[in-house]
Length: 305
Image (tube, rainbow, N blue to C red; front, side):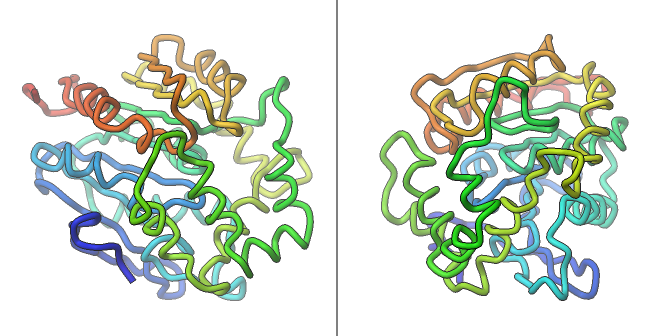
C-alpha cells in the first residue's frame, strides 16, 4: 500500500540486497546532479522526506531508501534478516555502490538515520560533501541523559515488544507525540501505513531493541568507533536543525553534536518536536535547501538559488 499520489508523488525503485530482499528507495531529480542521500529513522520511512525531495529535485538527485522492514521495503522475519545496526550500514553501502555516484553527496539524517549514516560516512569521508543533522545521535548516550522510560519499556520488556508488534503501539504513539504542531489525519495515517499488520511491525520493535547502551549490547562497538571517527567529518559543511521539544533527542544530544562539529550552522526550533521536518514546515525546508544549494569545492555546483 502507498499513500495518495498527492502526498507521495514519487516513483519506486528496488534493489535486491542479501538473500534477495527488496530494498525500496526513491531516486528523484537529475541523474547527473549533485546527490543528496536522506536516511530516516524509526518508525518513519521515506515519506518523512517527501517535502524536502520536492524542494530539491529540480537541482539535485534525491536518494531516499526505506530501511529493510520499513516503508515499502520487504519486511522479513528474523530468520531472513539480522535486524542489527551492522546490517543497516551494510545495506546503505550496497545502495551507494549500486548507484555508482560520481560526485560526493550531501548526507541528511534523522533519528536512527544518524547512527546508520554517520557510521557509513566515517568509513568513506571522501564521499561526503555536506551534512544535515536533525534530532539524532552517532555516539553513546550522553552522560547527562537517561534512557526515556517509554523506550526502555519497548526495549527491555516483552510486554512492550508485544504491544509494539501486536497493536502498533510504537508507530501509533509516535504518529501523535512526534508532532508538536497540527497535521492532517491523512499525514498521520501515511506514517503508519507500512506498519498495518503485526508481521509488518517487526522493524519498529527491533530498532528499539537494538539501541546500544553498553558494551554488552551488539552494535556498541560500532557506536564507539563511529564517535571516535566523527572528527574525519569535522571539516565538512554541517547544518544542525533541532526540535527542542523532542523528549528523546534533547539538549544533551545537541550539546554533544556541537562538541564534534563546533563550526556547524545550528538552528534551534523551540516549538518543534521529534518530527522536525513536519513541525518546521516550509521555513525549515527552505533553510536546508539553501544550505545544500551553496557551492563547495566538491559539490560541482555553480550556484543554486
